[in-house]
Image (cartoon, rainbow, N blue to C red; front, side):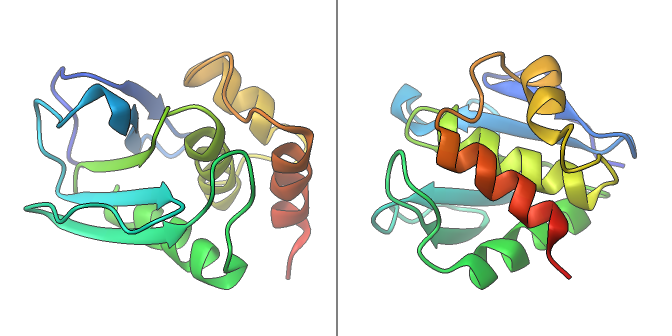
Length: 143
């Protein structure tokens, strides 16, 4: 398993032991580059030197394509087994926290506990809106 060694951003350790860095892009480029980045923004982010996936996700809203978001969450979890993975939006709390909660569900956290898990282990203000919280619960109940 690849681990993050310091650097900015908050690290979320999942029940499986995988670690994903959550980060706010407004803080500038990362000091330690990831192997894979999942970027959650309303418009395409600038190109980066590592593998990356962009999910169109306007601020304070939900992903424009929920199937693409679910596939990106699964890829981030899979890659976190051996690679340094970061999930980021502009501020690093709402969209990033929502994605991390969905990834936590994929890693075995119960849907009704995922938001609390991410707030406890990542950031206390993660998942900012009621509709983001509902999205996480619904994500856990999908087939």
